[in-house]
Image (cartoon, rainbow, N blue to C red; front, side, top):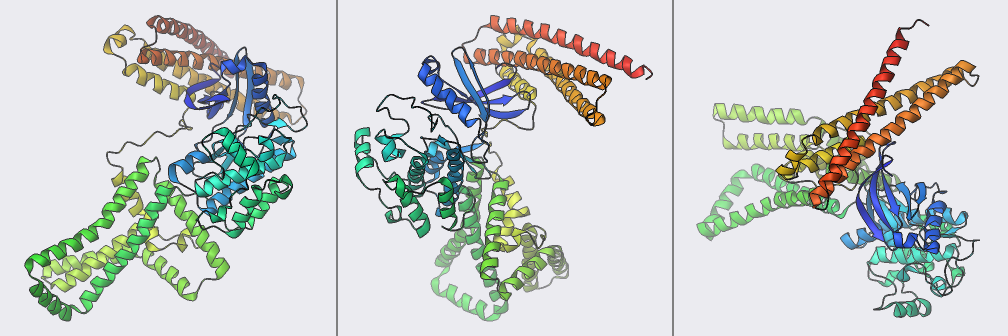
Amino acid sequence: MAGRFSLEREIGRGGMGIVFLARDVALDRPVAVKLLPSHFARDAAMRERFLREARTAAQFSHPNIVPIHLVEEHGDLVFFVMAFVDGETLGQRVRRAGPLTPSVANRIMREVAWALGYAHQRGVVHRDVKPDNILLERGSGRALVTDFGIARLAEAGTMTQPGELIGTVHYMSPEQAMGEPVDGRSDLYSLGVTAFFALTGKLPFDAPNVPAVLHKLVNLPAPRVALQGLPMPAKLAEAVDRCLNKDPARRFESGEALAEALADAGQTVRDVPPQVRSLLRQVRNGGVVLAGVSATFWLVLVLAKELVAGIRAFLEAIGVETAVVLIGAIGVFVLLFPVRLFQTTRRVLKDGMTHADVWNALVAEGKALKEEHALLGLSARRKRAMENRERWIGHWVVLSGVGASFIAVGVIAGTGGGVLVISALLLLSGLVLGGAGPTVDRASPLRALDLAERLMTGRFGRLLFRLAGIGLRQPERAAPAVGERTEVVLALAADGLFDDLPSDVRRRFPQVPEAIGRLEAQAARLRAREVGLSDALAKVDIAAGGTQVASRRSAAEDMEVARRAARERLATVVAALESIRLDLLRLHAGVGSPDDLTADLERAREIGSTVDRELDAQRDVERLLSRTPS
């Protein structure tokens, strides 16, 4: 794989393979590489099953199925390359944050049903549908089915011995557990178990050992999901219960039929991380508190004389010490909201999320509110409230300026405290409205949000995240930087490993940083040459217009040869750079040999010299051609 795919690290393993995060050198994109363990690769039956998974799934093109890019076998090494999905499995999501809301579970179940229906139409039964084989894409929440590790063509003969169980026992259909022939309805049963688990956090059948689970699975009716103590739409519960029917004929006849039934089960929304939901809930509660505090202040100002006398009498009655305790308790209550809001925001950042995740969640909620308004009708009062909110937010500068001016005049002229308090409230109101951001377009979903929610989408939300992130190291995301070239990522990693080595080792290899930088620069030159040749080829094709003369055809062939040569040299240079990185990684772990690093540095020097000569020669030829009159 050297020079074609750059391995980053292991990201998962199961009974049928080990998965690595890697980068496609030519296309500069993150990919996942699944490798069959060597002891399985030497087993002809297991090897064939693994290859059948890859070759079957590689034929699929569906937005809810992880695409396969490449399938290869070399001796005892059997692997395939698939798209990398930045996110987590449905199983990880439920184990981390608890059961899903019915709307989110409905949406995931529909997307998986579409994917399974697509596969079933092409004669493929997954046979291992379970939460850990459903990936949830970060950000979009899209569900993708992966690991057709034990899928087989429906018309093909079985690849297992009689009585052999394929699949995870808790999620098997009764007919699969008994070794009977299965079709797409078996996958729908497994999807029903998955939905049961996603909605309740429990399995419909569980026991201390496999035989006991199988006994329940085959002989007992599945418990009804609606009776598990959690509210959910009746149609969603009916769809799950129908999937869990023992008789395949009583289940949905296809994935499409299940998806259609789920469409009638209620509105489906994109998943919102629970940390973000908690933050938004606190913001809404805080909005109510702030509104109450503001109303109290204005009431105090309006009824100042009467209230001052009453408050003075009350304080004299309860005593100074009690008054201090009471005022302190009120102060703690007022401060509790911003402290908790700060803590929740910090927790959101610790879990790898950003202000953009909150923005996306609020946009999704705004869309849902707009749909609700369109369905139920928006009252005239609600319309006026939205228009007034936009008008005041749009004039926050005026409010702030007026308040600040009043304060300045009041301080200079010695105006009474009442005017100063009113001016301070005007300034504070202006700042709050300004924190909610500028006015938005009439079609924007954000118009449907309340002021407290709008605060999180504007300047206030961005400032809050910046303050909460002070001194906090963001956790690494699973995906490598998509915007960086592979050679840049490798060079940065190698430089970091070299800097972390003991000083005596660094002194022994002073040429390492120079070698890394040289290889990175050469890879960049080769990539630029390949891109330039690709652009030139495209222009030749356009100019020819399908009626190429011999000279144009010859020029296109020469450029294609040069482009392939540049790509091959690029792979060689990146492989040399990765070899140095791996040598440094081994030394860092205490298992490498300095001799290996010395040998790879020498090979890198030879490769670099060859590449420099070729690039310089090509540049000289191109310079001469550019000076030759046509």
